[in-house]
Every structure is written in C-alpha cells, then in structure tokens.
Length: 299
Image 1 (cartoon, rainbow, N blue to C red):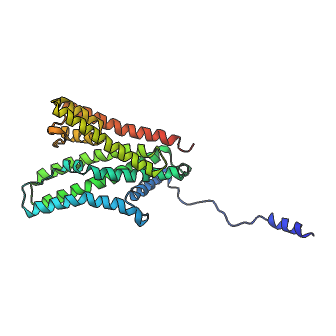
Image 2 (image 1 turned 90 degrees about the vertical axis):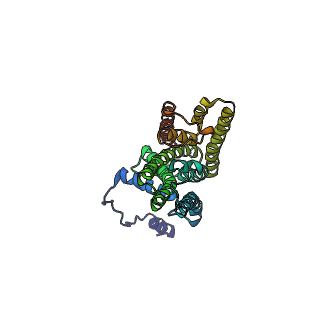
Image 3 (image 1 turned 180 degrees about the vertical axis):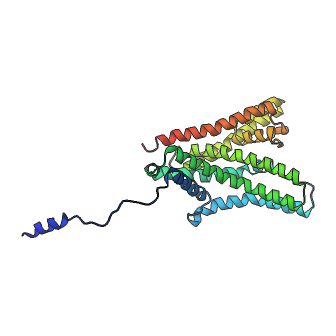
C-alpha cells in the first residue's frame, strides 16, 4: 500500500472521546437572570475583577460616606439637638460624586458586552431580552442605592448614638431612603440608555457626564435668572428639565425636604404630582428604550 494511502486512512479515523448528554438539573431563565444581576452588581464595585477596576468605585463610595461620618462625629462631640444636614439633602449635596459613579459604571455594565459582542451569547442561553434588560437595570439601580443609602445609614446610626429623637430620625431616614431609591432608578435608567448607544466605554462615560452635568447646570442658571427677574412661579417648572432637580422637586413636594432651588422655592403638591409623573415616565421610558435597543443588538 502506498504511503499516501496509509496517511489518508489515518486522517479519516473517527475517535470516540466520550461525549455524553447533560443529565443534571436545568435551572432555567430565573437562575440565569439572578446570576446576571449578581455578576453585574458585583462588577459595579469591581468585585471579581482586577484591582484596578476596584479603585474608582470604592474611592467614590468612600467619598460618599466620609462627610456623613464627619457630620455624625461633630453631632456627637457637640451634643447637637439635630443633624446639621437633613437625610433628603445629603444626596443633592453630593450629586457630583453620584454623577461620576454613574458615568463610570453604567458603560462598564453594558458597553463591554456590546464592544466584545457577547450579548448574542447571552441570548443563546435560556435568557431573553427582557431578562437581560431587567438584570442590568436592577443591578445598576441597586449599586446606586447602596452608594446613596449607605451614608444615610451612617447618619441614622450616628443620630441614635447622639441620642437624638428616635421618631424624628426614623421618619427622616425613611424619607431619605425613598428619595435615593427614586434617584437610583432614574439615574440607572438614563445612564444605561446613554451607555447602550455606543460600544466605546470612553464615549459612554463622557456622554453620561455631559447629560447629567449640562442639564443641571443649564437648569440652575435659568432658575437663577428667573428668580432674579421675579418670575418665582417659573422656577419650579424649569426644574422639570434635569434629573437631579426632578428628584429635588419630588422630595420637596412629598417628603418634607427643603428645596435647593433659588430662594428655596420648590413645587407644591399640584406641581409635585407633575414631577412624579415625569419621574415615572422617564424611568418607564428608559426601560422601554433599553428593550428596543436590545431587540436588535445581535443583528
């Protein structure tokens, strides 16, 4: 037999390497959705990733909590009758830190999947568009709630240690948690929509920062001009055009907060209802836009 014939026969041999059907439990969509949520939430703080990835989120978390710790220390040392900062005011004061965290982590949550084309791999498993969007949305909102809620917990525990009135502090703490929960949902939805428009993480970061910063700056300037010209009624209406001022308006109208608008003029109950409708509309709209985006992401 010629050598080339022997070589050809050896190349055509089929080897049985023991492939078997999977016979274990199939955990289904719910398990996949929970796993994606957990992985995304951990990733928002750099857990399970490189040490370099932990620096920014952990540093911003520390920056958020440090002023609360200082406020508590001063209140205890001076035997103050009340905390110098209200629970509902804290997130508004540190909105720049919240914006930086949102801008840094929202693109990390979705842009990398788009850039490396891993989203179709998710959908090849028992997971659908809704599962992916819900998991990412919930993870980003939860990460922001941890970021904004932890300082409020520090303030609350410190207030109790300072022996301030339990009922007043519990009420204020509850109002603060409702406020930051709404803020977390709003910021998560808007930032994920912006970040999902580009696979480039850097572009996503810049776009989120620009949206949050420019909108707030523009609204603040126009409100100040309206206040100086005596158009006090328009100050509240102008606040509808920036995410952070929407939260400010909602908590001023319904959560007993003091408005940060010029002159402290916040919306009343009637205008506050419009603020709530706009807030819920933006959250629902963000979810709808994400669903639409990911229906075509694999094409």
